[in-house]
Image 1 (cartoon, rainbow, N blue to C red):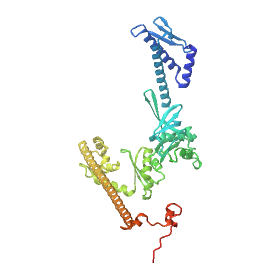
Image 2: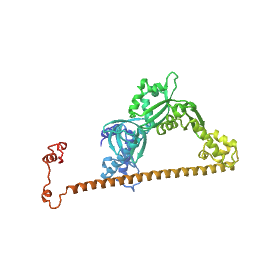
Image 3: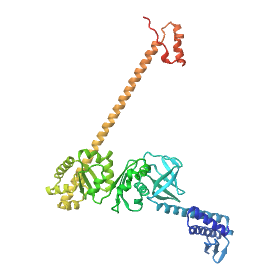
Image 4: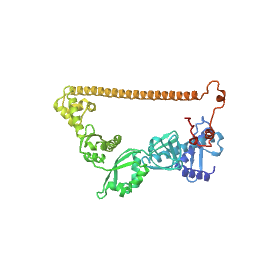
Length: 470
């Protein structure tokens, strides 16, 4: 291989594989050095040095002070050098691909579907293979070969000499990237996305704020008659999106996050990271949402555990907690009141504290605090066990009801089958000719119209009914 051909090959590899020329030259130098060392023998202690001029491609190899002609190396040594060079180049290509996609984590990636295997879509993204697992697809969607799909780079990891790129359409960052594409104010950092809570395929809550008081962050994201958010919803296959105005005050932010429900009052308990929200009876189901979706997404959005209650439920909960806490050993009225003020409404809530924490909260002795927590843990475990037993009993009752239903259906089927068998048996017996009447037995009487109906010449309903003699 002459110098000009070597430079041409290196340039082509750098262009096609996106690998640095220095890495390619170093791989070739190491390969030639290995071939030379094997050619002269491992027992030879004279070092071998190989260098390649990066501009001209001239190869210089020395065995000690003696120049070596790379073309004189043995065929076996040359084959080993070739394998080493391929390995080095693959490692360099793997590192390049990893670094490239690692920088794109959380960013939009457009890929073309090459095939779909057991629900997992295999895409080509920038000439590299990536996977979109079934778990990272929006529920209900499917892909066709050749289709262009928008995704977000979720994970990049090495697998030997290969790089595994995992894509997602369910991650909240996918919604974030779509908003950045569709809303110029977000891309220009005039509007900032503060938080996103998402249940892919169903609903997303996104909280935004504006650094410019003249820009309405919610209106800019939605657009006139929803013109801006429309493309995002279409990309998410009709997923519902709630755009919420961010506020640093949880007293304001939590009602915003629970919209469209009307909130009466919000109680914040910092020790437990809990917020109790009071609503009217007619707003309870709206605040909780279908299968608890609204309150669940609101909790994720604000980072607090939110409980929705009516005023009556809240008052009942306080009364119940007061009765429970008064049973704790060494408890005082002031301690009970302090626990309720801090948002502790059950035995389970107390188990989140340790002895020193409870001692600091209610001002008791450390051994008394430890005894209270031990009792609370014991009672909480007993309550959990009781709930688990009730759940098992309910499950057993349901299973028994299913078995009874199956047996009933099976019995009805058996009775129906016996009835039909009896009917056909009676029909067969009535059609059997009497003994000794060989003529009827050999040739049953059938009307011409009935024969025509059997052969398909006349519709069955056209066959005249037999006339019964008076």
